[in-house]
Length: 250
Image 1 (cartoon, rainbow, N blue to C red):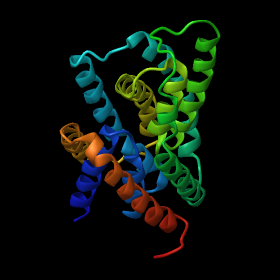
Image 2: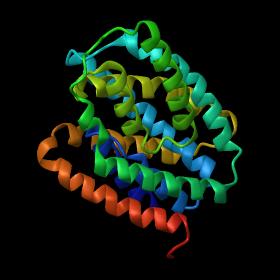
Image 3: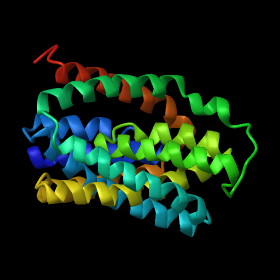
């Protein structure tokens, strides 16, 4: 039953991530509730994220959405930040981490409801970073990397807003950038968790299989039709899981 639960959680996460983000809001608490230490749950979740984002990057490239110059410029500071963030995560007390995760889940839920990126889609589009914009972008993604390395949950929404402000690109192009950057910095973060022995490879590979299944299903789902209902499901799940992390109910 536990293996089935992990697979289902991975499938749901892959589906949600394909449509925008929020999958780790499901998988992280599930792994913690199964009894994994917070750091191990965090590290195990990275296996699925690496697999999912590499596959998504390849798929976007096949469809003609591939911007390696911008992605690599932003990935380098994100990698540095992710190493810092993941080192913080592996050394943080479980109780404190769970409290922080509960707070982050509520904050991300607010972003899911408000959808700030939709208000930023009429900016001038660029495909090359130069001057002050490049400096601001590097600084921003260093901190995105710290957050992603530390907790990951909801980083997709943060990156969508950041990339919209930085590039002015459409959401399709932004998602293609997002998955490539996440794939690169998550590999470095996973390395930190592996070195510290904070990875359950069996559950991680099962989660990755679920993520792949969910990503395939999500790519065939009508985004406009399903967006409203998906957000409702995420909000309900976040309220329940954040409350449990805070010990509000059994």
